Length: 220
Image (cartoon, rainbow, N blue to C red; front, side):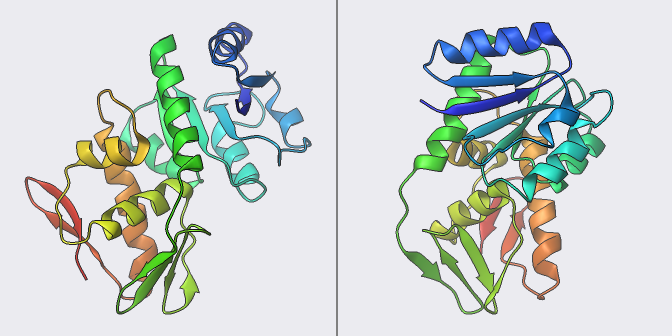
């Protein structure tokens, strides 16, 4: 059982989300007022669902404000799937998207996958010449500096690093990292990797290589 927060100005969607997720035994708190969420105590939540297009404080802005206060997965609910929106949302600290309209099975599977990933046990770590992973604290350190990665970005890095030298397609990365047995969101993986590269570039570190026509690998 997990404690989940859902924020959407459409009360019908909130009712549907609560009904679906409570059947899986989760405790679901819903809010239609995004502004009210900014004042809440959020440390007890295991996962947060945010609508993108809301009056007042939109989902992107709210995500950015919440990310500095919580460490749990944040998933956007959005009808906007163009790359610019994906980039904006992921840069604000979101872990994934659920595109509207969505069915009960997809919502349950994606939520379960992210919760499962959070509970997954890790080994101590792994080191490379210029970087090292601390699996217990979920940190990537480059030249002893902690990289400001989102949870999804870190998970992608850890998966590739654990399997360094092996090439994985976007579909394989999505399935292994997020555990969702459906169509992989290639735009999400590509955007995450673009953001990771931008953050590591400051240290002249480029461990994620593109193997054209196939996918990506960690190669240092």
